Image 1 (cartoon, rainbow, N blue to C red):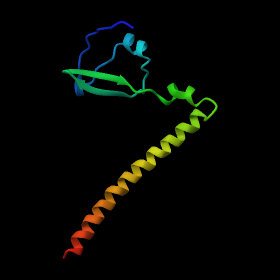
Image 2 (tube, rainbow, N blue to C red; image 1 turned 180 degrees about the horizontal axis):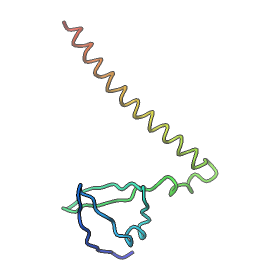
Image 3 (cartoon, helix red, strand yellow; image 1 turned 135 degrees about the vertical axis):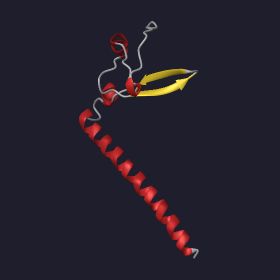
Image 4 (cartoon, rainbow, N blue to C red; image 1 turned 90 degrees about the horizontal axis):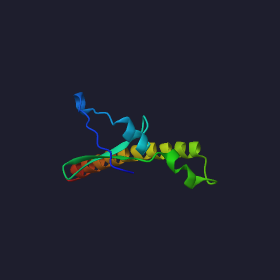
Length: 101
């Protein structure tokens, strides 16, 4: 895979377009997520593999659609636990403050 260099313009709100040739070469599709990082004064976009890209590793072990549902459920539960943890820390701080009075 050779280096492809294209010049793109940054538009309002920092938006830009990844040229079609690059999207095709990297398999980037609408809705894909990209990690963005800065390295040596360069902006680097890295494609985050979709669950469907990894489906072969689950062959015979899980249905991709069901697995995605389970992962989504876990992500939601993790987010809920994080919120509970923050609330518990706040309540603990309040209880400790009240206890010292």
